[in-house]
Image 1: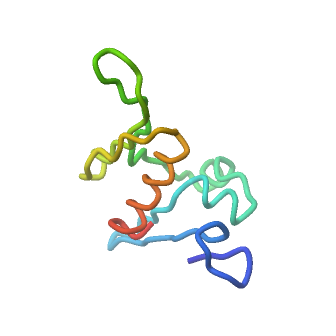
Image 2: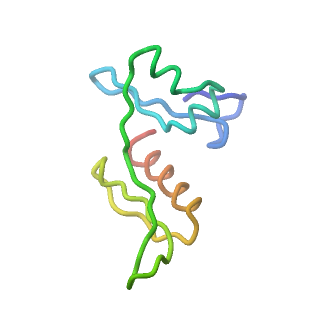
Image 3: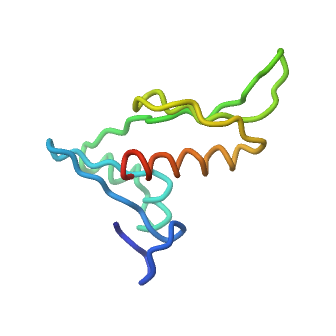
Length: 103
């Protein structure tokens, strides 16, 4: 885990997970905030690729948008929510990724 301070709270840390093939997984926004760099620039410099691991999208019931869900299907996970606020869905998404995928 990289940290921008001496503490390791979720607000000031980013988890990097390495798989057996050397691929690194992390939450893009967390890395930008903690490392203070433009991740897009690093991706271009190192010829890296990014991969979407989830989708936070509006939740519609009976034809009416009633909240937000975090769809974790791209990484074999469930649909989380519905949440009242998009920010809550993003928080749920990150919590699930940390708990289930270590990132």
